[in-house]
Length: 144
Image (cartoon, rainbow, N blue to C red; front, side):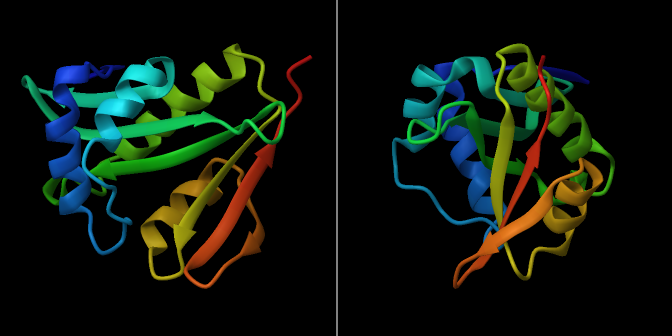
């Protein structure tokens, strides 16, 4: 099993994994994952087992709030959930974000997605707001 940076050509595979995660994950428009792979390749990771991509995590800087990073999506194929893959992907992106000097990470998950809620809590993220679909969570850390 390997966690590595995504390749642009893998965007359609990521789109299929994201579709597999519906309705817990909001669908993205066509071309989103290719764009993210091109522009945010340092913080777009895939989880690969036996040459098959079975999960991913992607995030990007918040340009409106200096020092803040957003986790956009984390998706894992159904048959691989509950095996610690989400935790490994979160660790990879947390390590990358800290190494780049960000002061905080934010994310969003749907009210109904208890697995996502538990994963965010496991990494110390706390609820800091909500909208009509779900909770916003954040963790603030010291990178001094």
